[in-house]
Each structure stands twice: as C-alpha cells, then as structure tokens.
Length: 35
Image (cartoon, rainbow, N blue to C red; front, side, top):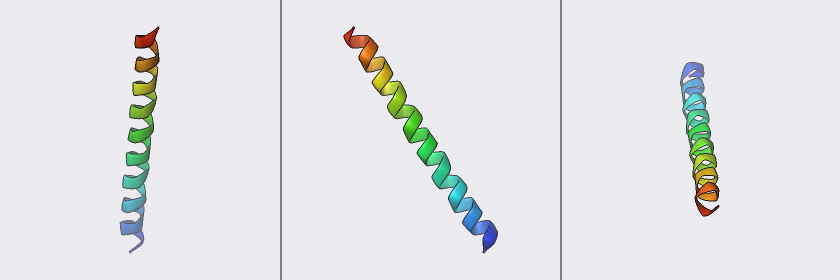
C-alpha cells in the first residue's frame, strides 16, 4: 500500500516536472522567435 502510494506520487511529480519544463521551453523559444 505505502510503496504503491509512493509510486503514484513519483509519477505525478515526474509528470508535473515534465509539463513545467515543456511549458518553460515553449515559452522561452517562442519569445526568442518573436524577437
């Protein structure tokens, strides 16, 4: 039970980090493309 919860938490954290990185890269590249 505990390990299962930890696995779900790790997956959610990984997804959140990936989404944040993709968002930042897209925003940064888009801003530079406009300039």
